[in-house]
Image (cartoon, rainbow, N blue to C red):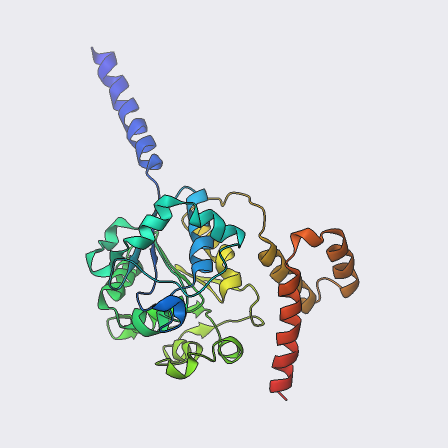
Length: 308
């Protein structure tokens, strides 16, 4: 009998530890409620960003909930349903149900989550900064250990009014977001209606703003904050969240548009040569988004012309 009791003393903690490790990490994805008529009447969230981040979290075995300020069905801006990540998500009935029935931020128990990931889209500028329930969720995660506060593109708009006592939580934190140059080139329809310039507002709250060239991948990890600059930073920012939760992101094949953005980054950073790019594109053309590369060249010329 004594031996049985001693065995239980040693075995039970091991069993309990194993059960604890089996509990999935849980992420709350937040999207704007502001969208209407697929962005024609009012801007909403970016479906491309949602689908890419969602698939990263799902494929890394995270539990996922989706919330918005108002709850219920949310509307994305117009998007390309043929993009591979969007195709996959549109066939995922569980994910679509989450978007049809988002949880209202007021109904969220922040203690249930290990991470928050705030999806971008211009709608985020209009409702996320002014949602007190979302601010409470972010602040809860801010005060807890082993948590991650993350966002992409216009998502950091949710942080600009969150305070810890008398100080903004992003003070002295390195962050990135959709930058002023990107707004000038790609945000002209709505930028005049924005309540503030995101880059400028983040800096005014004490954030140390980081950026790369427009529409190229940039992810900044600073303490428990993980931020991505633009849509092309989505996958890397989501994978940085996975890593920050103590997990190793699963290996995956890059999307064509993602690979194209990395190629352009390498050329601008001069880590690769034009000659290399010509050979690479000739050899692996099917793996790249050629119209995207051409469009980037056009906008690069446009930006240089406007800066003169």
